[in-house]
Length: 144
Image (cartoon, rainbow, N blue to C red):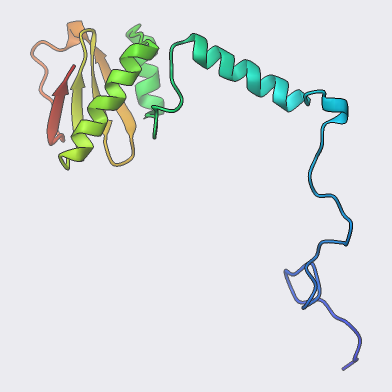
């Protein structure tokens, strides 16, 4: 075996070395204070979210929509505005505080089955489809 340096598998530097070259500037800096393209896109996105009335500081863990739920929302022409989305998030938070795993969230225009643990909307139905429907596999309900 040679006394020379060798590399360990899946290691990019030798033992005892930090891997950062002295004097290497690892931070990406803007030239002359001009915002980077990423900064421009990020600011535009935040402006759009702010214009929609959504406060990013208040949304701790926003809901996701399953592919099935997304399709049902489109098929049944169910619209959820930012204010209603905030109320639905709050409803799921309340259900979680009570230990509910799967909840039915009833809004003025729709009903949503939500997996509280995964914070995912499983399915959705419009107001017209609520009459005579039986909801199974839920252990709680929140009415908005």
